[in-house]
Length: 132
Image (cartoon, rainbow, N blue to C red; front, side):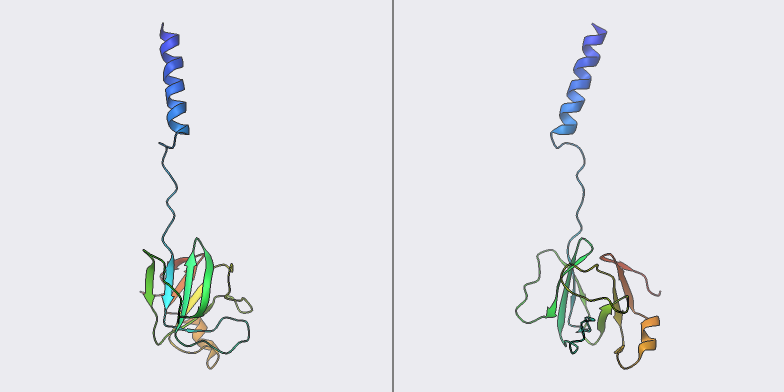
């Protein structure tokens, strides 16, 4: 009798774990950097008033903001007057690229030393504390 109870209990636990009652992975909302001057690392001229959309650690959009729809529930960073560029020199900020970004107060093309003093740093799609 006890063996039957244990077998039934084990079967019920297995059914629950397979039926979707187990905890689901939480996917963070997209992150949007809006209004910055985009220096994308491709050699193209900087794009003023850009939009960069990042989701699950990857760049989805990096272009001029005109006509781009912001996803629902996105976390928006107002970056008007700032510059956004890839963390690594030689990297390109384009679709599918790792979302490793710097948010800067000045144009790094005019003053490369500004790269060592970012306002914010994004690593694999998550903001880090650059300074307190």
